[in-house]
Image (cartoon, rainbow, N blue to C red; front, side):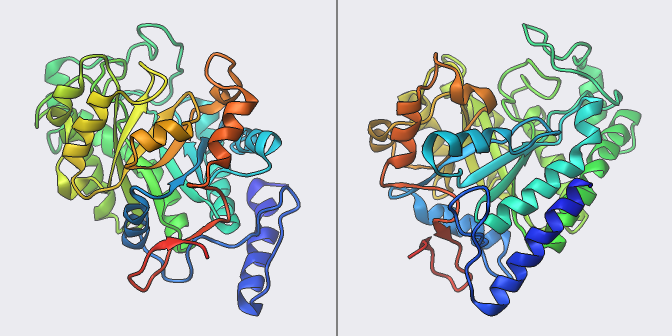
Length: 354
């Protein structure tokens, strides 16, 4: 049975429960299958809800798994804590296997929403003129991904071959976002992550004609396709000594809905990064878009602006980053909301589920 066929009964049951006003319990856990937003909820509603959490509540989150098994690590969260994350994250990916399983990822996004979590997506991608590639790690993790300065200029210039190649890559994502839009689901989207570091072809270029310009191009192109269900997440990496240059990579207030940080240099965001991103964010919500360690209560007390975190894949059980006790401590913090524990209003109010 296809992933799409497997998920249809759940979605139908959720719809029926909504019509009758009854609660639906998932067989895989104790959380009620109740979407976090009702009919007509928009990306703007989700952004407002996230903003309302600032300083009071935090959504738990987890990168779900490989595209062929995008719920693997949220199921492990449940094994440890008895809860499922409030934010599930998937990846479009860039290997052939990733591409072959993108529909599985989007079906999981629909199922997560139906069960009471916010879905998110990111885009590891090969350079525009390469169809598939693999992440190999090390100092040059995506072989052949470098772009020369003239090639970078071409990617940003309308009508060039590299620009056309990049837009065709984005075209692959359009049906995925459209499927979620048709289902009434807003989706967090984190393109060009860690653009302040040069490990990927899209990163390491400061200034308004650098990596930030590619973020703007991505935003404008997908919005031109009518995809108004995207919540745009911009996230840098906590590069040592790099906080003072964070603004050099910012695409602008009109292009960013959530200001994020991928935390890998330290176990938690440094004060310099917290202050720098707070200055950039203004009233926008802030997120720990990618972390190895589950944030602990004292850390969230010291930095109260974060509204969700996202633990990266198997780091959840890496003993250098987490123990079962530290995972439980993070999830059982009274400020932390997990799947099925919050609701996005559409009437101008915002707050956790009563």
